[in-house]
Length: 222
Image 1: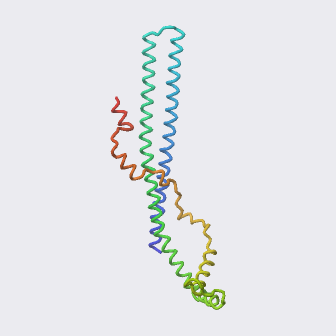
Image 2: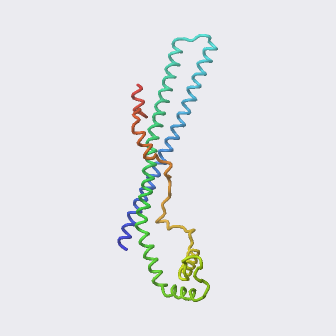
Image 3: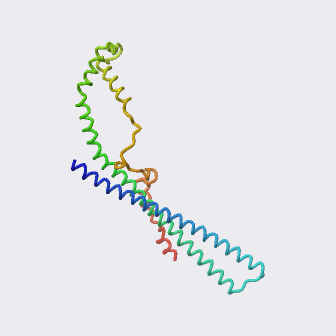
Protein backbone atom coordinates (compact mmCIF):
# COMPACT_ATOMS: atom_id res chain seq x y z
CA UNK A 1 0.00 0.00 0.00
CA UNK A 2 2.90 2.31 0.78
CA UNK A 3 4.26 1.79 -2.74
CA UNK A 4 0.87 2.63 -4.25
CA UNK A 5 0.66 5.80 -2.15
CA UNK A 6 4.11 6.84 -3.32
CA UNK A 7 3.21 6.16 -6.95
CA UNK A 8 -0.06 8.06 -6.58
CA UNK A 9 1.74 11.04 -5.07
CA UNK A 10 4.21 11.10 -7.96
CA UNK A 11 1.34 10.74 -10.44
CA UNK A 12 -0.55 13.64 -8.85
CA UNK A 13 2.52 15.85 -8.92
CA UNK A 14 3.14 15.05 -12.57
CA UNK A 15 -0.52 15.68 -13.36
CA UNK A 16 -0.31 19.12 -11.75
CA UNK A 17 2.75 19.85 -13.89
CA UNK A 18 0.77 18.69 -16.92
CA UNK A 19 -2.06 21.11 -16.14
CA UNK A 20 0.46 23.92 -15.69
CA UNK A 21 1.94 23.07 -19.10
CA UNK A 22 -1.53 23.39 -20.61
CA UNK A 23 -1.95 26.80 -18.98
CA UNK A 24 1.37 27.87 -20.48
CA UNK A 25 0.11 26.80 -23.90
CA UNK A 26 -3.10 28.76 -23.41
CA UNK A 27 -1.05 31.84 -22.48
CA UNK A 28 1.06 31.49 -25.65
CA UNK A 29 -2.04 31.10 -27.82
CA UNK A 30 -3.62 34.16 -26.17
CA UNK A 31 -0.42 36.13 -26.77
CA UNK A 32 -0.44 35.07 -30.42
CA UNK A 33 -4.05 36.17 -30.82
CA UNK A 34 -3.24 39.52 -29.24
CA UNK A 35 -0.26 39.95 -31.59
CA UNK A 36 -2.40 39.06 -34.62
CA UNK A 37 -4.86 41.77 -33.55
CA UNK A 38 -1.99 44.29 -33.40
CA UNK A 39 -0.86 43.22 -36.89
CA UNK A 40 -4.37 43.75 -38.26
CA UNK A 41 -4.49 47.18 -36.63
CA UNK A 42 -1.15 48.09 -38.22
CA UNK A 43 -2.38 46.98 -41.64
CA UNK A 44 -5.38 49.26 -41.14
CA UNK A 45 -3.12 52.17 -40.11
CA UNK A 46 -0.92 51.69 -43.19
CA UNK A 47 -4.00 51.61 -45.41
CA UNK A 48 -5.34 54.76 -43.76
CA UNK A 49 -1.97 56.50 -44.21
CA UNK A 50 -1.91 55.65 -47.92
CA UNK A 51 -5.43 56.96 -48.29
CA UNK A 52 -4.51 60.10 -46.36
CA UNK A 53 -1.50 60.68 -48.63
CA UNK A 54 -3.61 60.33 -51.79
CA UNK A 55 -6.26 62.70 -50.45
CA UNK A 56 -3.62 65.25 -49.47
CA UNK A 57 -2.09 65.17 -52.92
CA UNK A 58 -5.51 65.44 -54.57
CA UNK A 59 -6.61 68.41 -52.45
CA UNK A 60 -3.38 70.40 -52.65
CA UNK A 61 -2.32 69.24 -56.12
CA UNK A 62 1.23 69.32 -54.81
CA UNK A 63 3.42 67.70 -52.20
CA UNK A 64 5.91 69.56 -50.02
CA UNK A 65 9.18 67.99 -49.01
CA UNK A 66 8.26 68.29 -45.33
CA UNK A 67 4.95 66.50 -45.89
CA UNK A 68 6.66 63.79 -47.93
CA UNK A 69 9.32 63.20 -45.24
CA UNK A 70 6.65 63.10 -42.55
CA UNK A 71 4.56 60.58 -44.48
CA UNK A 72 7.65 58.54 -45.37
CA UNK A 73 8.81 58.35 -41.77
CA UNK A 74 5.34 57.48 -40.50
CA UNK A 75 5.00 54.74 -43.12
CA UNK A 76 8.46 53.36 -42.35
CA UNK A 77 7.64 53.31 -38.63
CA UNK A 78 4.41 51.43 -39.20
CA UNK A 79 6.10 48.89 -41.46
CA UNK A 80 8.93 48.37 -38.98
CA UNK A 81 6.42 47.67 -36.24
CA UNK A 82 4.57 45.34 -38.60
CA UNK A 83 7.77 43.39 -39.36
CA UNK A 84 8.51 43.10 -35.66
CA UNK A 85 5.10 41.68 -34.80
CA UNK A 86 5.19 39.30 -37.77
CA UNK A 87 8.54 38.02 -36.46
CA UNK A 88 6.93 37.72 -33.03
CA UNK A 89 4.26 35.47 -34.55
CA UNK A 90 6.97 33.17 -35.95
CA UNK A 91 8.66 33.04 -32.55
CA UNK A 92 5.36 32.25 -30.86
CA UNK A 93 4.55 29.54 -33.40
CA UNK A 94 7.82 27.79 -32.54
CA UNK A 95 7.07 28.04 -28.82
CA UNK A 96 3.50 26.79 -29.33
CA UNK A 97 4.70 23.79 -31.36
CA UNK A 98 7.28 22.92 -28.69
CA UNK A 99 4.71 23.31 -25.90
CA UNK A 100 2.18 21.11 -27.70
CA UNK A 101 4.81 18.41 -28.11
CA UNK A 102 5.73 18.69 -24.44
CA UNK A 103 2.10 18.32 -23.39
CA UNK A 104 1.57 15.35 -25.72
CA UNK A 105 4.53 13.42 -24.31
CA UNK A 106 3.65 14.33 -20.72
CA UNK A 107 0.18 12.89 -21.36
CA UNK A 108 1.69 9.58 -22.49
CA UNK A 109 4.01 9.59 -19.50
CA UNK A 110 1.03 10.07 -17.20
CA UNK A 111 -0.78 7.14 -18.84
CA UNK A 112 2.24 4.92 -18.18
CA UNK A 113 2.39 6.07 -14.56
CA UNK A 114 -1.35 5.47 -14.12
CA UNK A 115 -1.09 2.00 -15.63
CA UNK A 116 1.64 1.09 -13.14
CA UNK A 117 -0.78 2.00 -10.33
CA UNK A 118 -4.12 0.63 -11.46
CA UNK A 119 -3.13 -2.52 -13.38
CA UNK A 120 -1.79 -4.38 -10.31
CA UNK A 121 -4.87 -3.28 -8.37
CA UNK A 122 -7.14 -4.65 -11.11
CA UNK A 123 -5.31 -7.98 -11.24
CA UNK A 124 -5.43 -8.34 -7.46
CA UNK A 125 -9.15 -7.52 -7.37
CA UNK A 126 -9.84 -9.99 -10.18
CA UNK A 127 -7.91 -12.77 -8.46
CA UNK A 128 -9.81 -12.10 -5.22
CA UNK A 129 -13.14 -12.12 -7.07
CA UNK A 130 -12.36 -15.47 -8.68
CA UNK A 131 -11.07 -16.99 -5.43
CA UNK A 132 -14.14 -15.88 -3.51
CA UNK A 133 -16.56 -17.20 -6.14
CA UNK A 134 -14.65 -20.21 -7.46
CA UNK A 135 -16.96 -22.78 -5.91
CA UNK A 136 -20.08 -20.97 -7.11
CA UNK A 137 -18.69 -20.64 -10.65
CA UNK A 138 -17.82 -24.36 -10.65
CA UNK A 139 -21.31 -25.19 -9.44
CA UNK A 140 -22.85 -23.11 -12.23
CA UNK A 141 -20.62 -24.84 -14.75
CA UNK A 142 -21.62 -28.24 -13.43
CA UNK A 143 -25.36 -27.51 -13.69
CA UNK A 144 -25.01 -26.12 -17.20
CA UNK A 145 -22.99 -29.09 -18.43
CA UNK A 146 -25.56 -31.52 -17.05
CA UNK A 147 -28.48 -29.56 -18.49
CA UNK A 148 -28.12 -31.13 -21.95
CA UNK A 149 -28.49 -27.66 -23.43
CA UNK A 150 -24.94 -27.62 -24.76
CA UNK A 151 -24.36 -30.75 -26.85
CA UNK A 152 -20.98 -31.08 -28.58
CA UNK A 153 -20.93 -29.75 -32.10
CA UNK A 154 -21.36 -32.23 -34.93
CA UNK A 155 -19.44 -30.05 -37.39
CA UNK A 156 -16.45 -28.88 -35.34
CA UNK A 157 -14.25 -29.84 -32.42
CA UNK A 158 -16.27 -27.69 -30.02
CA UNK A 159 -17.14 -29.81 -26.99
CA UNK A 160 -19.82 -29.41 -24.34
CA UNK A 161 -17.14 -27.96 -22.04
CA UNK A 162 -16.19 -25.40 -24.68
CA UNK A 163 -19.80 -24.39 -25.22
CA UNK A 164 -20.54 -24.02 -21.50
CA UNK A 165 -17.42 -21.95 -20.89
CA UNK A 166 -18.26 -19.77 -23.90
CA UNK A 167 -21.80 -19.27 -22.56
CA UNK A 168 -20.56 -18.32 -19.07
CA UNK A 169 -17.98 -15.94 -20.55
CA UNK A 170 -20.66 -14.30 -22.69
CA UNK A 171 -22.92 -13.78 -19.67
CA UNK A 172 -20.09 -12.20 -17.71
CA UNK A 173 -19.23 -9.91 -20.64
CA UNK A 174 -22.84 -8.73 -20.84
CA UNK A 175 -22.81 -7.94 -17.12
CA UNK A 176 -19.78 -5.67 -17.39
CA UNK A 177 -20.62 -1.96 -17.48
CA UNK A 178 -18.19 -0.43 -19.96
CA UNK A 179 -19.79 3.03 -19.66
CA UNK A 180 -17.80 3.93 -16.59
CA UNK A 181 -16.54 7.15 -15.05
CA UNK A 182 -12.96 7.00 -13.86
CA UNK A 183 -12.02 8.29 -10.42
CA UNK A 184 -11.04 11.95 -10.63
CA UNK A 185 -7.63 11.24 -9.12
CA UNK A 186 -6.83 8.95 -12.06
CA UNK A 187 -8.36 11.09 -14.82
CA UNK A 188 -6.03 12.57 -17.44
CA UNK A 189 -7.62 15.16 -19.76
CA UNK A 190 -6.29 14.94 -23.31
CA UNK A 191 -5.40 18.36 -24.63
CA UNK A 192 -3.24 17.52 -27.65
CA UNK A 193 -3.72 14.74 -30.20
CA UNK A 194 -0.98 13.11 -32.25
CA UNK A 195 -1.97 14.90 -35.46
CA UNK A 196 -1.40 18.26 -33.72
CA UNK A 197 2.35 17.75 -33.32
CA UNK A 198 5.03 17.45 -35.96
CA UNK A 199 5.92 13.93 -37.06
CA UNK A 200 9.55 12.76 -36.79
CA UNK A 201 9.75 12.86 -40.60
CA UNK A 202 8.57 16.48 -40.76
CA UNK A 203 10.99 17.49 -38.00
CA UNK A 204 13.81 15.75 -39.87
CA UNK A 205 12.91 17.58 -43.08
CA UNK A 206 12.78 20.93 -41.28
CA UNK A 207 16.22 20.31 -39.77
CA UNK A 208 17.69 20.89 -43.25
CA UNK A 209 15.97 24.26 -43.60
CA UNK A 210 18.44 26.90 -42.43
CA UNK A 211 16.25 29.83 -43.43
CA UNK A 212 16.30 32.40 -40.59
CA UNK A 213 12.99 32.84 -38.84
CA UNK A 214 11.50 35.14 -36.27
CA UNK A 215 13.79 37.68 -34.64
CA UNK A 216 16.88 36.24 -36.35
CA UNK A 217 15.34 37.00 -39.74
CA UNK A 218 14.42 40.45 -38.49
CA UNK A 219 18.02 41.21 -37.50
CA UNK A 220 19.40 39.79 -40.75
CA UNK A 221 17.14 42.10 -42.75
CA UNK A 222 18.40 45.27 -41.05
